[in-house]
Every structure is written in C-alpha cells, then in structure tokens.
Length: 215
Image (cartoon, rainbow, N blue to C red; front, side):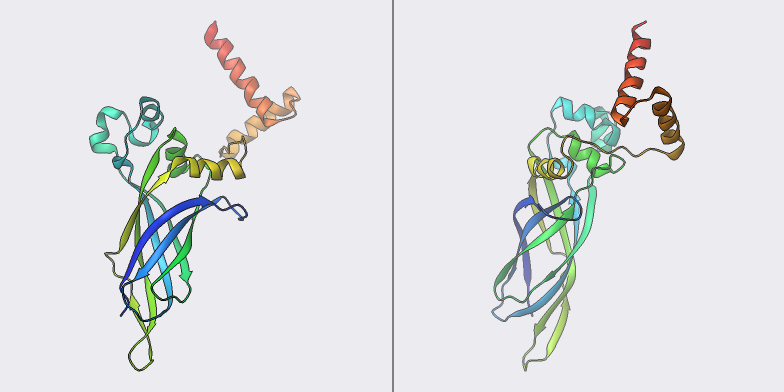
C-alpha cells in the first residue's frame, strides 16, 4: 500500500487564471516501489499566525483581527485560508503538482486583512491532507486507500509572493464592499457633485472630514 509524504518546494504567481491565484509546488513522495495510479487529494491550508514575529506597524494594523497586542497571548490564533483539491496523475516514486490557492482582495475576508497588514517576511502555513489513493494490489486488482489523517506539511510563504499576485491582478487598486444603502448614498453624493469617478467622490468626502477636524 502506498505511504505518501508531502513537502512544499516553492510558491509562485499563476499568471493566467480566472481569479487571482498562487500555486504551491507540492512534492508527493511514495516510499514504495509500486506505481500509484492516481490520487484525489484534498488539502486544508491554515495560516499559523502565532508562529510569526510582527513589527510595531504590523501589530497596529492587525488590531482589527486580534485585538490589542497586550492580549495576543489569548487572542492571536491560526486562520483558515482555504480548502483546495487536486487530481494527482500516475507516478512512481514522487511527483510535483501545483496546489492552487485563491487570493481574494476582499477586505471583508480575514485572510486578506492579515496579508495586507504585513510588510515583509514570511507567513507560516500548515497544510493538512486527506483524500483517496488508487493503486494496484498484488494480482493487479485496483484498490483504494484513504490518505492518513496524520499527513501534513509546513511551509513559510514569502509575503512578496502574495503581493505579486495582488499586484498582477489588481495593479494599484483595492476593492471595497459596501452595504447597498451606503452605496446608494455615495452614488447620490457623486451625482450631486458631478464627480466623474468614485475615487474623486471619496477624496471629496475625506477632504471635507479633514477640514471639519481642523476647525
């Protein structure tokens, strides 16, 4: 029976994808000598936030997620990034596959807030695996076994890789999700002022707020 082990060898931007995506280069190794016919692999990816050190500016920005840094011993916790699946082709010994992770720029999502708060360095990840392994038993009959629940891999993802993905798909822009009633009020303000872009509408509101504070 195959005994699979997993290791991440790198990460890179997926240039042409329907949505912003990065690929973890996942090495799958079988200690046996018999061919593996296929693997239907499921993976849970978690961000191990407590395993990273943070500079003061990062601590301030992460207050929305984890509260005041003085309480981080109780509030700093791991974050679920995503669940992904990949169909692994036949192999003997080892194979390298792309594990594609979605990278949203929606600031209502905790993972986006977390990554955007970081200046540089690496993000510790834990990958937890499950799924089904298809292989030939003695006599050639096809058999299926479950991937052991204890199988996992760690990887330190460079923050710059996530930024490369965001910069590629959202060059010098950011997405803001508003409740419909707030959007309607903003649209009405934009129309009343005859402002051609949403940026100009927001800049005008911010300027008015700064002038009020200065009085």
